[in-house]
Amino acid sequence: MDDTAAPVRSRGFILAMVLAVCFATAFVLSTPGFVLLMAGQWGYPSSRLGLFVTVDSIGSALGPLLLSGLLSRMPVRRIFVASALGFAAGNALTAAHPAFDAILAARALSGTSGGVLAALGVRYLALSAGAERNLAWMTIGQTLYSSLMLIEVLPAVGAATQATGAFALLAIQALLCAPMAWLFRRGEPLTAERPGEGVTQRAGSLACLLAILSLNTAVGVVWTFLGPRGVAAGLDEAMVDRVLGAANLLSIAGCACVPFVVRRGRLFPGCIAALAVCAAAALALALQAQAWLFVGASVVYVLAWAAAITLMMVAMPGYDPVGRYVMLIPAALCVGNGAGALVGGALLETLGAGWAFGFAAGCCALSAGVFRRLQRQAQGGLAIA
Image 1 (cartoon, rainbow, N blue to C red):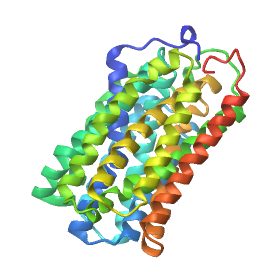
Image 2 (image 1 turned 90 degrees about the vertical axis):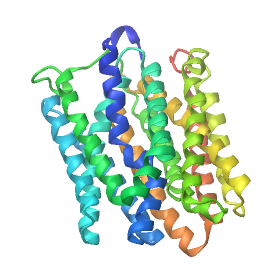
Image 3 (image 1 turned 120 degrees about the vertical axis):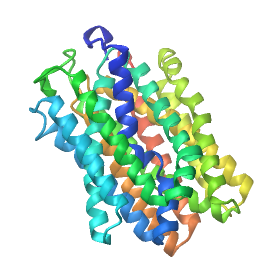
């Protein structure tokens, strides 16, 4: 993307969009912690826990689709406030722990509203000047946020109020997003901003989305069921949360390397290498559960995933300079996450952890194959080649 054609946004606006994405993806970012709390307080089996994550992810995928279609002519302020309130209501209802069907409806409401917020944030970060820097900071922000949640917040809240308090906290955070709507101009429609005059490359954009979808299907397996895998390796729940939080902190190094990799013209090779490492780490998690193997593979997987997903998002504006497909990135992330959680839960209950994490490794390999094909097709004049 040509930065000279992209609007320059203030640092305060960029920071607000990063925070909005962090809050909107809070459940996905900290899924292992929430899964452990829900299983501990409400006694749900793996299949139902996977279903909760899947329904939330389907809602999160529908949000960006609504944003790019029915909501695209509405003022951004109105969309932002309505989504924040819907996100808060969905998590407040979950905290109340009604009947099973009502919780599924609450997760759908939370996911859809959060998906709209996330898509708005990603769009404005990707189509503003310095997209690779903005998106790297977004991933670093999500990493720091989820690390704090897993290491400190969820263990503390869980010890005091269990899953009820954790979902109430998400509702409160959602309400904090609402005032950010006033950073947009009064009456500003989402379609008002069309930076640049580049032609959208549909095939390349869809290939990037496919790679993102496949990688996050692996994440849906690994991230949803890393908690139980750590417990099976002999660690207690608090220690599992701390290991995963520490892995997130270490993954900041991978995110921080993204602008350097892009400037060196190594986007494709760097992404393919990171995806290969993801596949290897997932295969390690498929082996017999041992504490040292769990810790090492978890750290490596999260670090490599953070670098790979950031590079994938940076690649998208090079194919889609007007943001038509960029807004669908959160949808691909969430569909993959939901599909992975559903398939992973079923594989765990029927065939065991080896098959589930082996399936995740295959998804990582598929993403690497897609980016390898994009690398071969990339033209010499393409900015991201």
